[in-house]
Amino acid sequence: VQLQASGGGLVQPGGSLRLSCAVTPRTFSPAVMGWFRQAPGKLREFVAAVGWFTGTTDYGDSVKGRFSIARNNAMKTVQLQTDSLKPEDTAVYYCAGRSIRRGGSYSDAGTYEYWGQGTLVTVSS
Image (cartoon, rainbow, N blue to C red; front, side, top):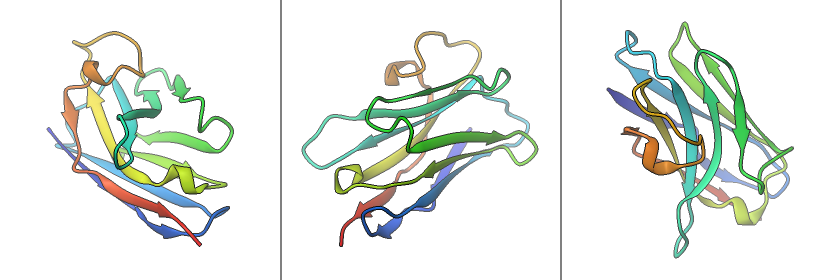
């Protein structure tokens, strides 16, 4: 299983970006897909996650009301819509997935089996 993240870039404060993560092979159906981020000198932080079969979502406190996660089962992609971006949102964003064999909180990075390579989001004027 491979995850390919894309969509990062440079954006001004208050702007938006849509990150995307493609899952291959398409025959694989993850149980949960999530996004985490890591800024320089900081610990990895949970951003958002979605239950693939249930559609249940969860968000980190710092992004609630500004970010939105959605999955597309036909395309086997998961998107993270980031709005009202702030300089403190600057980080490398990683998509992650786990199979039905894994349980636990959506926000627990240790429960995820598969990780993408990361895409850099820079929020600066």
